[in-house]
Length: 98
Image 1: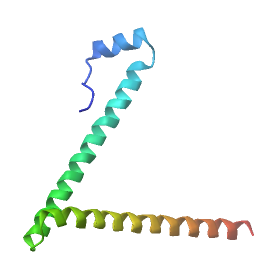
Image 2: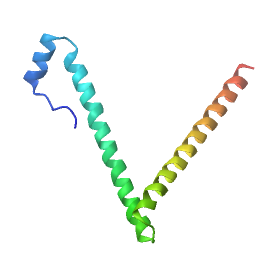
Image 3: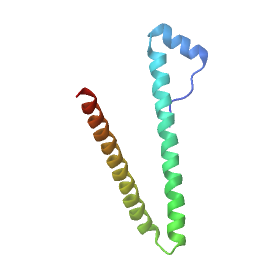
């Protein structure tokens, strides 16, 4: 659970007591809120996948394994695409310097 939202007075008090602490607190709160949103998205994605998988005759246990495989495959594709982009950019920079 993310840190609580501060009132303006609490932010002012933090800034007076320790300059920069309110900004750090708010930065950490934003990160925590984003992490919570990402976790909810991931849980929703898996729930949809599991419903579809079970709907097609699979089991819930097998759905978790299949989802993990699917996510790993997607990660591999993303890494491959990033590698290819980096390779092309390197080749382009080398050509530009010749």
